[in-house]
Image (cartoon, helix red, strand yellow):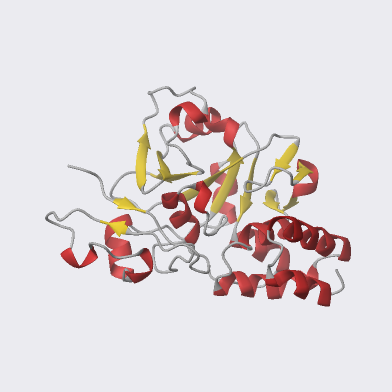
Length: 279
């Protein structure tokens, strides 16, 4: 029985048990709606086979047309975890980890916001370390190109990412078992312990010490980098995050973000708004 395919538009719904970063994983890293996690520049079909348990009304629908109930029924719920949970879970992880997404924005601004999930990040090349860390704790699923593929802990556990992950996979969903909520949407970041690399354009690089900051023993992605990752989506919550965060950035940091957007998204509306703030 063929598995369903589910690839989404750049604008993905925010609903109970669903998040844009998760949708991005199902789309594949080349069609990121988040982390990055907007505007429907691509409307890609979600098709479900006509079989028992899948409502015929879902066939031929786009992700944006699915109800909250359909999302929950198809993909399951997400546990409401916090940075403290991530800190505890990754305490013994031997590689570099940090938190991206909305929690990174909230940690910087101090402004509370809603969260659909939590996005720990690790280096893509450290996938074997991550799999060993998850083994016996959580089941790992590779999210990419319309499907979730289990990564069995005893199968090629030390394999390189390109050898064991589906093409375009940029994140791992993790949960204790099939009856439990998903706990972590783990982003696989390019680069190294010394260098952060922008996943959409490798010309943008920073020393990792410049890309991360720390509070209460938790490392977070710098807010200007998170806004850059959010810039592709332009969802309502991305606009809110920009409005709250951009005025709090130092001028040199706003200038970096403006220059990065000019390089990668030269017609982006945030460029003029950054100039208005004195970037």
